[in-house]
Length: 350
Image (tube, rainbow, N blue to C red; front, side, top):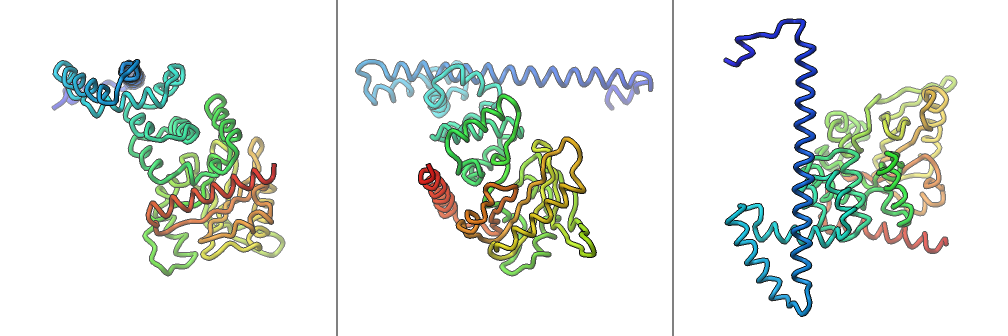
């Protein structure tokens, strides 16, 4: 039996106990964060020192290998497996990827060493910055962080198709002012392979599967989405219409209407979503909220349709969904091609 079984707390002392318990938990968390930051900074300093030694005048590649091999053996004897050859090379990579100590100070405040290990293989600095800021914003665990990277979240997010200056400005706003832009929220495509749908299914099947796996669907959407309604009925005159799924986004401070479509995107879907958004703006939006956003999820789409309908300039987003994942190579090729096409159009428009 525990001490609390022998000495149950009197009723009047429970509020005091809860407050003291909270103080202890907060202190433990602060200590853990401080220890992690100090450890990560140590690893960066070690990596930088080794890099400086290896990069010295007339140093050969063989010399660098010998230095690391000798050093890890000596350090492992004195300090254990944390200083294995593999970890020393991670420290060197950390110092190489983040040469500026001021940036390192910012990174180690937001990410644990295990998070840093996952981020340092990414060569693109803007892509790295995206994952760092989104991880800090959504407080991803290491497992979630790796899943986001492996699912190519950056390439699937609308921001990746914007000019570099726009990406940097949006990330700076998120870091300094905690302001999240829609381009950092909405993706294309959405990966819905967890729904377990067969080759043949209806819109109702799709909607029902999403509700069964609502938690995983929200994880794919993003952590700030809150579910509000299924088949939200809106009445205009004597006609009833139904919004498939209605969510609220806490950071964007707006309603998000989701329309599910089985086939290819059609131009008529725009008018239908515009009707939903105008109704929501008139009857559901409260003071202090932003205008509603519409997300049309379809099996496929034609980019020229999107461009001609000027949907990129509206509050309507169109995205594909994948109920069965292709190979990662095929997905990567598809996403990189979409980014290249978007960047080429930007250059042509300048």
